[in-house]
Each structure stands twice: as C-alpha cells, then as structure tokens.
Image 1 (tube, one colour):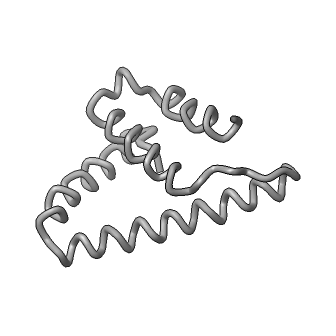
Image 2 (tube, helix red, strand yellow):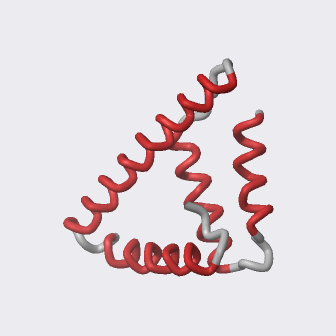
Length: 98
C-alpha cells in the first residue's frame, strides 16, 4: 500500500487528487469513507492473523495503522528522498513491535 516504488507513488498521487475532489463532494466523500472502512477491516484481519501466527496479541488499533499509512504515504509522495522505502517501512515495524 505504501508508495515504495514509482507505480505505487503514482497511485498515491491519484488518491491525493481524489481526496481533493472528495472533500467538496458528498458522493465522493461517501466513497472515501467506504474505502477507509474496508481498509480498516482488512488491516484488522491482517493483525489478527499476525497475532495468531506469533502466538501473542497485537494491540494496535487498525485505524491507527491507517492514519500512519496516510501520513507516511503523503510525506513520501511529496518528499521521496526523505522517505525512502526502508524509512517508510520502519515506521510500521516500530509500531507493530512495540
């Protein structure tokens, strides 16, 4: 999901353009909210699988992951030299290992 390569960075630029339009459109904002709900549900399922695989609970709110994802991705799109892939991934490693 993170903009770790050119194709995913382009996808994020498209998302940012969509967000710019969605903020002024009830219909697009509704689509955005639905996408966020689906992403949160997907991350929640992934966290549960990770918890089962490691035999210990993962106590990270999936909404927190989405907020971190959005923030890191936006920063990486605008400042890719400051947010290379390893730096992006490190944010999640820190959160999930803590």
